[in-house]
Image (cartoon, rainbow, N blue to C red; front, side, top):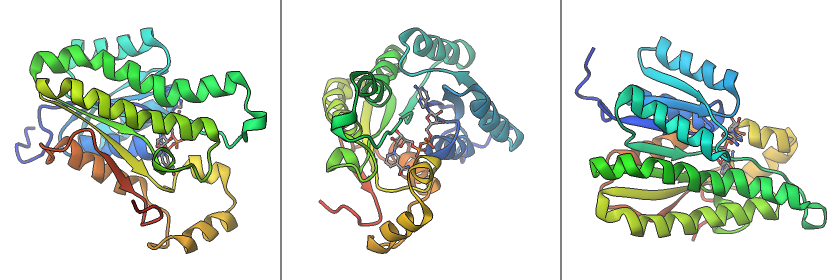
Length: 253
Ligand SMILES: NC(=O)c1ccc[n+]([C@@H]2O[C@H](COP(=O)([O-])OP(=O)(O)OC[C@H]3O[C@@H](n4cnc5c(N)ncnc54)[C@H](O)[C@@H]3O)[C@@H](O)[C@H]2O)c1
């Protein structure tokens, strides 16, 4: 059934790392507004679960098992979206990993892995959707950076901070290049958000300590970040190359 009042009717969105956390919340939020959502994740069963959730609640989703660091898998994810739904107008580069390792113990392999998923994956997916967005002269790309990219990571190691700062530079450079084609590129910089990534790294006592130090004294929710992403892919026409903080006032700049 058509819902013309929905903000994203006739839009096709890819959300990477959508098997849980902020990616899952974003996939659900975009689907709720009428987008067809490609629920992409390296973890096939988690992607399938979110896809089923969306389809069961009246939305349209397709799952795509994709490792964002693998160019061939990224190409087939985008190809599959285009074959099934004609184009891709929204990309949310959300997939990310974090290790808390201090520099003395960061191996070259771990450095490469963190840069690969958080930064290179963003590059590969963005490059892969460009032809279809250029053809339609319309696109919305949102990259998941972090407060880490604006300052320094609370939980992650040096590689995580470097990768998320890289995402911000990538966002600005790409935004400048693709603006003439009707494509905007922005970055979202969450502080501590209540997801598995944070729960795995922190004891409840440590989380409580962080919460007490924030002006808005709680963690953010995945749904709050999803709402910001929704704004960037719908109502914002004149925002591009921006790095937008969402951190309860933990980092003000
Ligand atoms: N949670 C936070 O406090 C926080 C804060 C700032 C930024 N971030 C960033 O937000 C994004 C989402 O974080 P989250 O907390 O929801 O994380 P999460 O760990 O809950 O979920 C991340 C998802 O990414 C997937 N993934 C991992 N490697 C992948 C790969 N190579 N290819 C495709 N998918 C892959 C995982 O399977 C998982 O489903 C990440 O980029 C993270 O760095 C998180």
